[in-house]
Length: 360
Image 1 (cartoon, rainbow, N blue to C red):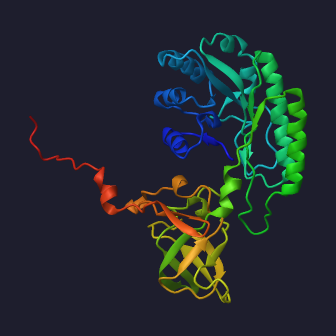
Image 2: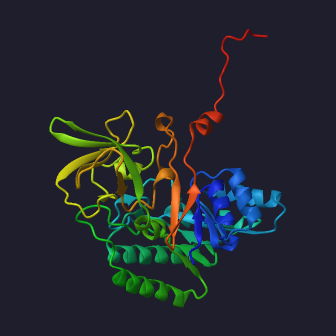
Image 3: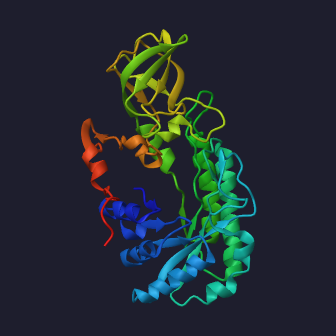
């Protein structure tokens, strides 16, 4: 089965409580705090991926404070080369992520000075939403080659290399998912060549989006259906606050995730609708001018390919609407895995300041 890459204390606990073995968990992220690092040490995870020399040295100190003799770490490298085929570059240029390749090359003394942390490998994540299988394979070969060369310079073993991921999903019209046959053959060859030189080295590929995006549907209920200056709008009970990725905040061009009418999936799409959420901002547009069967108040619409980067990547507290319920359907049976936020829950953590109380 799949292992877990986590980036917060809550995600670490989630993985552990879900039954992921500690040795199958890595923790990465550019801004880990001491609580998170200590939790990783105490849990005995596979490795912390350090994103600066300062973090590596802090981890070394914390391992000693925790009374441990040793703990594994990896170095996240910001390579000198850029990824090909990436919709969003995360390496090969100035970034908060990782340690520049040039700095890693000169870090042999700092790595050797570590008393309790053992550097067991390297990590690189070059970009995301890569739809061409050949680009994924090419980037993987580049990362494996860089890891091999840097490990030799640092004098460290190569027990684990994380080649990142970036495997894309075809969200929009005109896109296609990566060719799985081409991808599989290319990755087997690239990793196989590396494995023959480094038998026993664990190669990690991060596939979160590719694994779950197609499995998720964001379901909204139409509250109002209205016409404005010749265009039809469906105002629904959720939008940006639940699914910022579909809204496309930060994108230069608004493109639509696939949307279908859940009540009339086979009906004729004889009208185009712009699907919006309930927020007081013109940016709260989930899908623009989508052909759908007739939509009435109360109808359910589904935004497809929403299994990745949904509520947890969205401003759920915008206008205090809260987060939606989440349901997992397994073998035909629905399981409520997260309850919808209530107003009392949203207000329960707020405190009313009494500004009229006399000063003591």
